[in-house]
Structure formats: C-alpha cells, structure tokens
Amino acid sequence: MNEQEKNPLAVGISRRAVLQSITGLAAAAAWPTSLRSLAAATAPAKSINPGWFGFNLLEYFSTDPDWMQHFPYKDDGMFREDDFKWMSGWGFNWVRLPMDYRFWTDPNDPMKINEKMVEPIDRAIKLGEKYGVHVNVSLHRAPGFCILDGGDHKAWGIRITTEKTNLYTDKSAQDAFVYQWTYFAERYKGISSQKVSFNLVNEPIDTVNGKPAPDGEARYVRVARAAIDAIRAKDKNRLIVTDGYRVGTEPIPELFDTGIMQSCHDYKPGEVTHYHAEWARPASMNYRYPTWPEKDASGKVIADRQTIRNDFRAWAGLAQHGIPIHFGEMGCNRYTPPKVVYAWFHDALDMIHGLHSGWALWNFRGPFGILDTNRAGTEYTGFHGHQLDSTLLKILQAKMKV
Image (cartoon, rainbow, N blue to C red; front, side):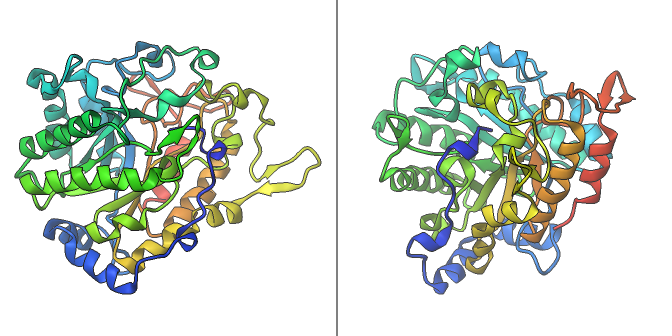
C-alpha cells in the first residue's frame, strides 16, 4: 500500500534480458507439487493462477499505534472470526495478513521469537481452515525494511519507528529475515499450500537517498533466494510468493527459475486511488478531484481502462515462463467518490481478469474495503452493526473469475 505512481514506472520485462523459454519449463517443474495441483483445482485450464479473491486483514499490521486512527483494527493480533465467516459467506476465499515482525520478535534480539505472540497467527490459519479461506502470511515490516519508513512522516501525521538496519545491505538484517521464514516454515510444515502460503516481504525496493538503488533489485533477489532456500529446506512444498519489485509493480525475471508466485499491487493511477490519503501527503492533497476516466484540467482523458491495461501489460508475460501471479493488493481510498470508485473497479478488475489472476483489496473493514469505509456519498446497508457498501460487494462478486 503506497503512492505508487510517484515511484518509477514499471517498464516491464522487455527492458531486461528475459530468460530463454526453457526457463519457463524449468520454473514450472520447480513448482511444489501442491502448487501445481492447487492451480488445477482453483482455476480453469486456460489459467495457471489459483482463483483466489479476498482481502487483507490488519490485526498485526503495525506496532506503531498511529495507524489505528486510519484503519479500524486493534493491534492485538486477534483476527476476527466474523471476518472469515462473512468473507466465506459472500464467496471470497483468500486473506493476506500483512504483519510487523516486531509483534513477536524480541527488539533486542532479532533471533528470539516469543511463541505466545505467534499464536494469533496460528488462530488465523485455523479460522481459514474452518471457513475455506486461504491464508497468506506476509511480512509487511521485515527486519531491515518497511515501505512505510521512507515517507514524509511529519506530513502524514503518523509516528513511525523505522528500522535501524538495511535488509538489502546488512548481513544482520538478512540473517534475521531468513530466520523469520525458517521459523514459520518449521511451524507450519505439514499444512497444505492450498491453505497457507508465505509472502516474503511487502513491496520490496532498495533506495539510496530516496531514489532506487542501481543494483537494488539484484540485492533483493539475493535476499529472496536465501529465504526461499531456507523455507524449502524445512518444507519443500510450501507455496512462496514475492511481491513485484519497485513496490509491487515490476515482475522479477531473476526469480523465474525458483518457480515462486509473483504478486502485483494495483493502485494506478494514484491520483484516483490515493486522493487525499494521509500516508501519501503532501502530494495527495494537491491531486485533482477524482474522476474515472481521469481527466486533466482541460477535460482531456489522461487515464482510462486502456492506460491501466498498459500499466500492467508486463505481467501477462509471466504465464509463458510458467510463473503464476496474483494481485495481493488493490483498491481506492475513502476520499475517492463512490461513483468513481465503482467505475475504476469495473475497469481494474476487468484488466486483472484479462491476466487470468485473482485479487485482494487492501482492507476488508476500513477505507479501502467494503465494510465501514466512511466514504461520503455511499448508500450503505446495515450489516451486523457495520455499514456495508453493497454496491461494491456486488461488483466484486461479479468479477470473481480468472
């Protein structure tokens, strides 16, 4: 979740020397058996991607409490059973848990984990099993890196405790990162990848002085490979996911040979999806009032369904290399008017369907979700003490197809 349009644009696979076609065969062969059967079980023959549709749940999102003023969650790890039950009842089958490792890790010893604090994750996995919802375990904040650390925290009005080490350059952070995933691999060994997957780190990007490091992607690939090897040493069939590079927008060909799934995040154009978003300030306060299609001051269309198809065209190429994809985050913040939100979702979900991929909204409850969005102008339906955006729910249900 970030103001991605201000980051360097994803320019696709063509800008690099793409691996030869044999790589795709090798990658497909490298898939865990459970992943190959999963794709076959959840998606039609034309797609290699599992048919997963759902939301992110934030109960372990951040140890920095200021975030709770913007997202309706309690930072206690107590994922709500009702969330799983309601999602499942509406036909959704996937949740991502974007989490802060500091909840369960000793701040003075990154190699020491408090198992009692891991139990809420165990509970979420059991709730997923109970309601038929796949659980994607994700490090939103990993040792040495969090995408939120690089923002203008003063403008945001959010106090954030930043990492003291660098995942991409510091061996101590890399060792701690691998240790986190070794621990989870051992803890959840034996649970089918149809039920649980691992998302290595949210929106990786290595920066120097606020700009992408020239060799940053290569450094991320080395870190990711170390974690992948450690996970597979404990559980060779675990489904592993990497977010795309440059905050979830660019595929990573250098990881094709591992066969792991790659995840894309869709918040384009940011002027529409992050209008007035607190964590995109100060830029977001100067955006034009959102429309869809997006128009400039003269009324000229500058973004529409074709531009977002162009933005994500590179992701279509992964299938020929045998690499499954999923859109692990997407959506529009609560300040975007409802009619614009609905129109944007129609086009964005059609684009994702064109890639035969599943998707997930950033929130279930909260400003990017379908419950308690607090979006002015929305016609809500009362639902068990919550305000349901039933129009958006119907759009999502109609678009649940790969």
